[in-house]
Image (tube, rainbow, N blue to C red; front, side, top):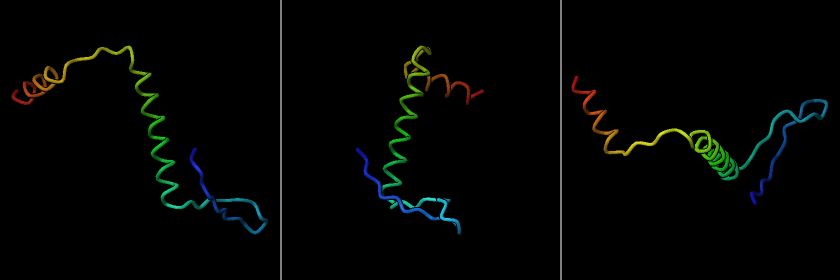
Length: 66
């Protein structure tokens, strides 16, 4: 479980307008969000065809030669 210690910036009426996080907390939160995005992308592409890396590399080299 990620524990964060937010500090809030408030306006003249006491309404929260922004938040300040420790850098390490922010970086960990960002890393976890990226992981969630990666899992969503993998799920989205699950039914797409897969090609061996060597085949893809050879095709790219052939296209560069043209």
